[in-house]
Length: 275
Image (cartoon, rainbow, N blue to C red; front, side):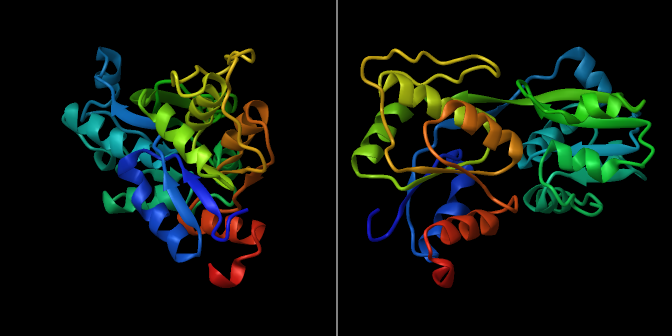
């Protein structure tokens, strides 16, 4: 380990600044290499109908900050807003960062689930009558919330509002970061895990997002390696993907927040007094 542990930040560029500043303040050396970027999706006719201003939902489920951001954008494109669609209903965010993003839109957020993932959302709603729920989400997702609510009789309308795509130019930057030495990698989503696994498998030649459930080639002649590196994840879904794809110890942050990430890293490296 270097004197100041070097931590790779893989978040999209527009979302990385807060984490980079917090890591630096806690005594780490952040290395920002955005592996993915997030793009809005054009609304399909059925999705536009689901977001029509006349529609109402008793529950709005927000499983990420991106779901808030692009869910609102999609609703506006349909002539509505998330607040209007769930007027009088409940708003359930997956964690505190998502709750803060929702509050900035004027959404009345109820208590944040104790566990910050899909299982936590379902546990939070256990015993609550959910008749009609809106779930803005990524194009490709392994989320369990929709199926879980349908299993107890709810109508769940899922609208794909954004997609996560790889940054082809990130492979070379990742290779350079590894040459400089890395002690930890922060991963905020399963798509970031897949992008990192693909980049490691193929070296700096190519970086493509691997669809959920797909395997990446294991016989690349010059894979990148991260010896002695720990992978710190937000959310059990992200951690499960990391355990399946990445060659190293996987840690799970107790809280879905920048503070939670920094705290977990500080504990791991014995730097709690500096966090």
